[in-house]
Length: 384
Image (cartoon, rainbow, N blue to C red; front, side, top):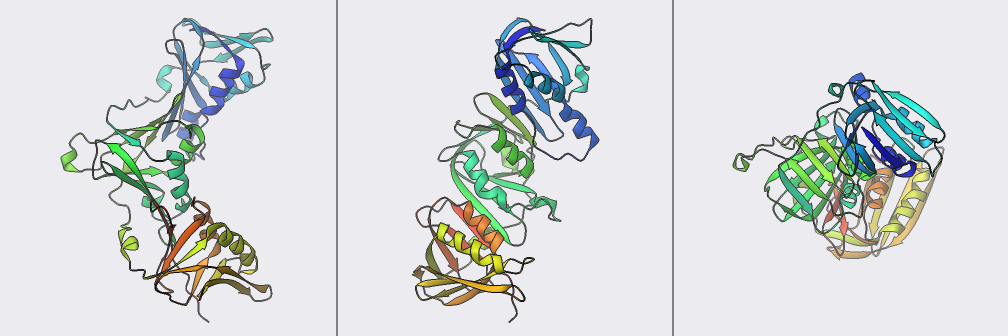
């Protein structure tokens, strides 16, 4: 291998493929520390991986001799980072020496190389594709991923459920007990009535590494016989202009049935200003029980009263103007302020609709103008 590139392009690429994760296994840490560098036409491709995620990106450079090597990625990144910003960098390796030579006017730096067989096999996907048409993948993940509780006992909810249809699909997330979020989007896919489960860590890395402005296509390695409707999906790959992220995924067959939440009858509702509600919750919750963050929402004619009270701390209340939608039912509902603030913060529209029936049934928040995002929160029990 022999090539020349500039320091700025190389450090940008190296820092862009760092996998954001807390790996518990020594094997995962070992894999992630290794960097695969291989020539690819008019440039090089850099690849890093752990046990679940692989990230690849390309760098344009002048290649005079093809080749590929494996080195410790953190050491190479640190060396390149400390070079002058305008430096030209020569990189070379040979079969005779297990060394990658990095040279520039400031000096020469030799990194030990490792056997190519040490680097995990990177899956190649030739399956179906999913194109998102009406919004960005970033937006869909932001609307849903907050609801995931990675500490939940049920590991089947430690991520996002993708339900794929031919023209309209959805992403769902829940912590299993209190909050649930659903985002719908227009899609094009050769798959229909298909689902897969994307770990939250993979979703976070998509946000970190895949451009929000690019048209994103998801490649899916799925069961070839679609008539079986088996969830044998094992990988997805998300591409933008320069970067590919490949993630393990799992079948979505064991995900909790959430349709009953959306089918419940909610004859009453109110229209409220989202930011005004968030700001009020933040202030009133200061005097709530610090272990429960419980706030009472009292719906009365043309107003919503937020209140909290904690012995030996104090109490607070605020009034917010509302408009009634459907039947007017005056009611007191106790909700976790932190969960509610988080869910409302991931909605886009300022005018939101809050639907409810009783103080024991889940409360549904969605947009007044668009119906493609639903946030559901379960009330807290409270004994006077």
